[in-house]
Image (cartoon, rainbow, N blue to C red):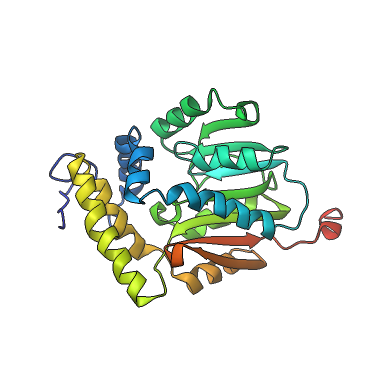
Length: 266
């Protein structure tokens, strides 16, 4: 099933195939998301057998129960893609302004178009930004979140450090990611689908490169314990992981950890 990439990051069918070993990796990832932007939502629904309709709302449910109960006024969605999580957050937290940021212009355009008639539109804004260099002042947001973004970043420590920086002293981070199921049986079934069926579906729609890259990218994501340790290392005080779908995806939650009484006197 493997599809070899050429030296310039293009699969044999002409679709982008990022290679993290190259210094052009970040640019190749941007080209990949530009290529798949139009069919991104449809393909996600098919490839996940509709489970992605459940994963993001459940992650926000986890977030709602994790944070300390202070009002959420400003929320940042990094790597917002076509705006799924951005819009869901605006609906779940009706007093919050939500900013969706993505480093791919085609994704931002799709997000803008699909949100224009939504009732939450007055509280939602979009713009281009890289997770490695966020164009926001320190302490701006009550929540910073991302969904299925971490495995695409060339430097996860830098990205988490940036997210920690832009959070308010009592802020919360939510990162939703595909993960390795702990059960050996579920893990085998997961990889049979993720490593074989998903690339086959991608090749069927002339996107062999992106959907061969997808299962490969999981290998570069820290495991459960290493992810929690990394969040601690970049300055988060309280971290948790909450699995969904028998561990196929995981919500990583991290609190800045400074009590509100102390934050007011900083």
